[in-house]
Length: 101
Image (cartoon, helix red, strand yellow):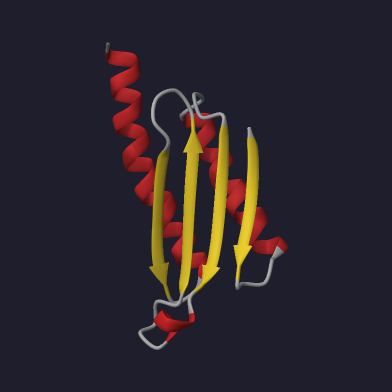
C-alpha cells in the first residue's frame, strides 16, 4: 500500500509519519482492500486559541467511493489517533458491504 503525506502550515515530522504508517499498516492487515492512503497534517492558527489548532485528515482509496476522516485536536498525534478510530468505523461498514453481498 502506498502512503502519501502532505503537511500544510505544519513541520514535517519523521516520528509522526512513522506513527501514521504504522497505524495504517495495522488497518491494512485487517482490511486488505485498501490500496492507497493520503495523510494530511495541518496547523490552523484560527483554531489554536480554542485548543484545536491541529488537524489530521486521512483519505483511503479502495473499491467504491473514497473513505475520508478528519479530526481537530490540541496536537497532531491525538488528531491522528481520533482520525484512525473514525476510519475503523467506516472500514467495518465497507467490509460488511463488500463481503456480505
